[in-house]
Amino acid sequence: MQIKRLGWLALGLAGAVTLAACGGGKSGTGGGAPAQTTATGQAEGTVTFWDTSDATNEAPSFKQLVAKFEASHPKIKVNYVTVPFDQAQEKFRTAAQSNSGAPDVLRSEVAWTPDFASLGYLADLTSAVGDTSDFLPTPLSSNQLDGKVYGIPQVTDAPALLYNKAMLTKAGVQPPTTWAELQTAAAKIKSANPGSDAYYLNAQGYFLLPFLYSEGGDLLNAAEKKITVSSPDAVRGLQDALDLVKAGSVKADATSDAYNNMMTAFKTGKAAMITTGPWELKNIKSSPLFTDGTNLGIAPTPAGSSGKRGSPVGGHNYVVYSKSASTAAAVEFITWMDSAENQAFLAKQLGLLPTRKSAYDLPDVQANPQVAAFKEIMAGATARPWIPEGGGLFAALDAEYPKAVKNAKDAKAAQNALDAVARTWKSSVVTDYTIG
Image (cartoon, rainbow, N blue to C red):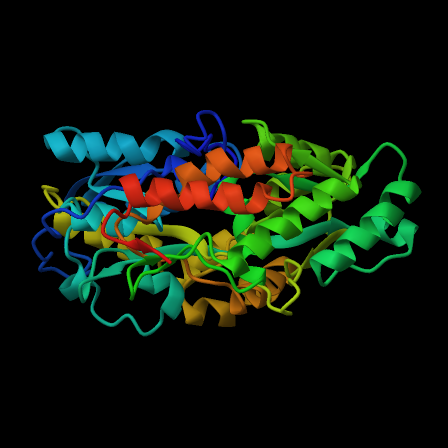
């Protein structure tokens, strides 16, 4: 999921980091022709692979796998290209539209996959992939559109409450289980750790979702084509976040670089608690505070007044360009890259969560306490709406959530912000939906 560099397009985060840089598109003409091939070990050719993983923390491990693949598949050459995450969605869209320069394989964020499939940019892999029973259902579902499969899930994730054990112990508090508990604990943590904040609230759209979901809110009701982001439950969720800001014991960051600021604060002991996902484990362990992992606590994001928890499901898929001249080799490549053994390798190296059920039975996964902790988080995570327009939902959230945080003392700030989001979605994202 890779939030930090987004800027997210809108997230675009114009420099900010948000899932929004994934700006989704409208439904198009449908997926590409079926890739009538399976991984046989007999394919040959050159495969251009756009890797959207973090260039510093993650890409070196992906390069290791690519080298192993080429060694075991001498007839296939992989042209490995690192593409910045915040540029990849629009770069692929532009290349696919013009049929010029698109890669054979893209590491696609989950929200991009149904968007690109609806526009005909992705190969139909239904026949090529075959049996999908080893994949976890929710990660797999982001690859499915109109009964067809357009990719295979490479990694899955969900944000958790990460905390500095020593700082919480010094304050004599346990990891909060509700947002109300976090507000109470924050004052004690701040008092016991002068110069540090208890919780770093990152006011970017994706990180609003744990608040919305915890009160029973949601973004859309796709089945009924309704925009529900401004419902009373969703407003209560945003109000939980604003109540933390008003209490004064949390650091609220509504800047365009909020994500990177949050990570720096946590790694230097300036923030005791943050919300982020397993994609940051290697980065966090680069800090002297967390080198061996023993001081890093991982807990579910707090529940709302209803007792419900709800981190959003994120992750990435391997997809194949519909007009690839090396489809067979591309399928061979992604099938090998996404094996249970290679997913276990990435879990060991990076803390990334496998999407294959069988990977969780392998020693490298079972021996990793952080992966085990995030697996429990995933069990209660909430799937985002896997619709072609899904990536485009975050731009408005990225614009309105910071405004609400800056106006937290306004009793109508939460309702006004989410009403504005709903209107924007109705006018330019899901125009055939009703607000209700």
